[in-house]
Length: 182
Image (cartoon, rainbow, N blue to C red; front, side):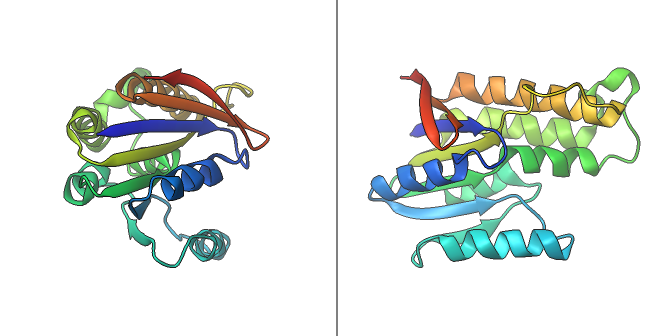
C-alpha cells in the first residue's frame, strides 16, 4: 500500500493536488468525502467538487465511519482519496454532547474509537490512499474551548497520520512542497 498525506490551508490547492496524483496513478479512483450538506452553501460546495472530478470516478460519503469505508473500499487496483480528514474530525467532535473535561478528546468515545480505528488501519490497507487535511495550526489561537480542542486534535491527527504515510506534501498557493518522501 502507498499512503500519502496532503496538507494545506483553505483554498491552498490540496484537493487539486490529490486529484492530480490520483489521476496520474492510472488506477480506478474512488473519492471518500467526509463533508455533510447541512446547509445550502455546503451542498453547493459538494456539488461543485463532484462536478470538477472526472466522470469515471466514484464518490462515497463517510462523515464518521471512515475506517470502515476504507477497509471496505481499499484494493490493489484502486486509488482512494479521502477529502478531508479535517471535516471528518469536525464531524466527530460535533457529535459530542458536552465538551470533555480538561479538553481531553480521548474522553469522547466516538472520537477515540474512530480515530484509533483509522490509525490502526492505515498501515494495513492495500492499493493507494491519498489523505487530504487542513493545516489549522498556523493561525490564531481559537477563542473558544471547542475551537482550541479542534485545533489541537487536528494537529495531533495530522502528526499521527503523517507518521504512517510514506509521502507527506504541504500545499501553499497551489504549489506542493514535499515534506516526506519514503
